[in-house]
Image (cartoon, rainbow, N blue to C red; front, top):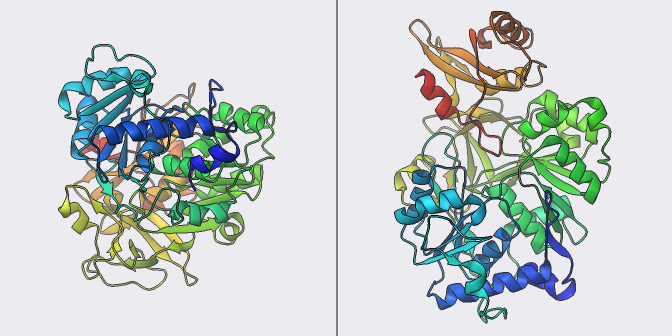
Amino acid sequence: MYPGTHAATTPDKPAVIMGGSGETLTFAELEAGSARLANHFRAAGLQRGDVVALVSENTARLYEVYWAAQRSGLYVTAVNHHLSAPEAAYIVRDCGAKALVVSAGVAGLAAAIEDHVDTPVRLAFGGPIPGASRYADYDETLAGVSAEPPADQPRGADMLYSSGTTGRPKGIKPTLPDRRVDEPGDTYQALFGPMYGFGTDTVYLNPAPLYHAAPLRFTATVQALGGTVVVMDRFDPEQALALIDRYRVTHSQWVPTMFVRMLKLPEQVRSSYDVSSLRVAIHAAAPCPVDVKQAMIDWWGPVLHEYYAATEANGITFIDSAQWLERPGSVGRAGLGTIRISDDEGTVLEPGRIGTVYFERDERPFEYHNDPGKTLAATHPDHDTWTTTGDLGYLDEDGFLFLTDRKAFMIISGGVNIYPQEVEDALALHPKVLDVAVIGVPDEEMGEKVKAVVQPPEGVEAGPELERELIDFVRERIAHYKAPSSVDFTDFLPRTPTGKLVKRELRDRYV
C-alpha cells in the first residue's frame, strides 16, 4: 500500500497535519503532488537507482518529495538541516544526488551549498532562496506536469546518513526492492502495522526531525496504511501533550530525553492535558533510564513499546510494557535477525556476558556508501552476514537483550570497564540535572577516570556543593568505582535533535 491507495477512497482525509500551524495535506493532494514530481524526475532523465537529496525542515511538502522518490525507484536522502554548509554539501556530493530539493525554510543553508554541489535538477519550495540562482521554483516547474501516476512505478528506498555521533556521517545504502510501490513486501508495513495496530484510524504524533530514519520511516508507514500524521515543527514538552489532547492522538514515537522533559513539567501542567487516547507510545533511538520509563508507565499506563534498531536496519528487538516490567532495562527479544553477542576475537559469548551486539541475517542488509572499510568494520570477523553498529550488551537466559553502552564510549579505568550509560541513568531524574553526559578523560594513574558533564536547570547554582551532591547521589545508587570523580557544569550539551548525545564533540574538549 501507499498513499495513492487512500487517495482513491478517502481523498479529503488529512495525510499530514502540521501541529504548529494546523496546515493539512490531504491524501488527494499528496497523491497528485508526488505524481507530478515523479513525472518531472522521469522527464529530467532520472533513472532507477538515482538519488534525490532533500534539505528541509519539518514540513508537509516534504512527503511529496519522499513519495515521488518511492514511486520512481529512486533513493531519497534527507539531509540534516542543522549541519554546517560543508557538512551538508558533503552528504549531497557523497550520495551522488541527481536531484536536490530544498525548502525556503532553510534558505540560508540551501544558498550556502549551491556552489558546492553538482546536481542537474534543483527545486525550491515554499518561496525563493535569497542569494541563490540555480534553484527552480517548485510550483512553477510542476504547474504544467501531469498528475497522472506514471505507468511504471518501481519501489524506491531511503538512503540516509548516520547521525555522526562517533565520526563523519555514513551513508547507508540498502538494496532497492524488486517490486512496484503498490505491491506488498514493505518490511515496515508488514512488521509494524500489525504489531502496533497502525491503520486507517491511526492518528500518529511525530515530535522529531524527519531527516532521521525512524521519524521518516514510521510516518511514511502510517500514511501508507491510511492513518493521519501530526508533525511538530520541533519538540516542546507542553505542546506535545496539547497535540495529543487536541487531535486525540492514538500512536506516537519518542526518545528518552523527551520523556524526561515531559516528566519535569509541573504536575498541574501535566495533569491538565488528556492523554487517554494513546494506545501505543513507541520509544527508541537511545537507551531509556529505568526510573524514567517506570515513571512514564505510571503516568500513561502500559502503552509504552520499545524497540532497538539502527538506521542500518540490520536487525531489531521489541519489548512491550508488560515484558519490560518483568525485566526492567531490557530492550526486548529479536524480531528481525538473530542476536549474537561476541567478544573482540569473534567468539560468541554465553548469556550474561557483555560483548558486541551482532545481528545475524540470511544476507548482509546494507553497506556503507563509498566506504568498504567501514562496512568491513561493522561485519563479524568470521561471518559476513553478521553485522553490528558498535553497541555493547548481553542476553539473559530467555534471549532478552540488555544494552550497556556503545563500544566507542566505554571507559577503561584501572583495567576495569565502566559504561557511561549506567552513570547517566543514575543522574537523569535528579531535580538539579537538566541534561547529563558521562565520559572518560585521561588519567596518568588509572588510564581514564570518570567525568560527568551536567547542564543544570535555570536558577540552579552550579559549583562545588552541587558537584559533591551529585557524586554522592550516584554513589548511593551504583558501585563507588563507577561514580564520577569530578563534575563539570555547562550551559549546553551537544545532542542531535533526536536526543542522541554527540559525545565525540564533548570528548574532544578534554582529549
